[in-house]
Image 1 (cartoon, one colour):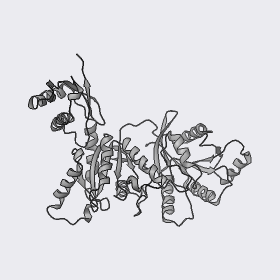
Image 2 (cartoon, rainbow, N blue to C red):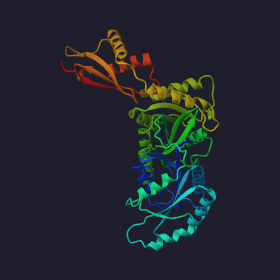
Image 3 (cartoon, helix red, strand yellow):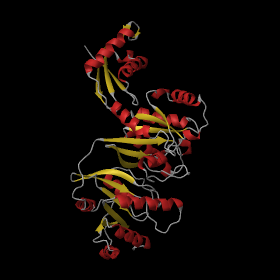
Length: 438
């Protein structure tokens, strides 16, 4: 069986995201006093007492709302409830039961799922009868917690793991490729995620900036497990005014950092912009594998030169990542969609490739014979040997006589020789130059 899923649901502003962040041990969900900040389902992997599970933070449920975004949030929460093994229903212990609380409780009773009632914001001075009122929701014993003060969170986690199905897989699973979908707002990132999953996983609208959080979604295809990360579109700093939007940009950059492979989406209709190159630079500097997806290719009028001309533009604008494969797609129609995961698997393998020290130095010696290292003021660079120290990205250490003589152009030459022999397609290579004293 797959890893257990725990969904945290409730009406807006009861403290779901604060609780989620406390359990995750980091600030994953955006926390703001504005109701409705968390719009989509947000996933994180959690471990408690040796048990591993996935927790979902959902947007606040407003059962009667007719607002388009709020109604989609409700649909997202309903999907989370449907897919969860255990549901944590969170209410606000500082207020009386609301009609929204009662309607959500009714929805959960109909689900026939394991439901745990968590009364949040319970600090010293709150009367017991305030907690007892929540028995009327018909969901069993309420557990009083305070996410801010970490009150009874361990007790709640104990109850959560006790509700898992007996055959649940709670072991740690490292064989997962983490794929971040990055790009400007409205480049089609959420549409691509939804196409992968065959469901309306992420809220899609024509309003730029709809996706505010970096959202993790477990996904499996042909036996390979993935985590798809849909990031908020990264805007120019001059256009980032709202504080929540600033958090989103930071979260998107953090999503790049924790990914293995980045799918960089370019809007073919808009063309390549300066912002596209900046976003690509973030992924390159982070040492992530990158695949360039030119989206909305179906909207472009073409002749026999269009494809080659666009490839040339991409290679020119992204000259610093000539290693990245390019695929022309349509997230809307599914054009060349099957090629994407094949490329993801391929570049992920390239990123963890290891080369033996003996083979590396055979290539290094041949490279030195073909092109002598540079010299300065009569002193020539000597490269004694090279070894690979790590992967993700593949990292190589050059031991030399003088670091100052190791000009970046010669290091780039060595990189090109490595790529000529081993490809390393889709991934940047990192070089560390160290002096070896005699």
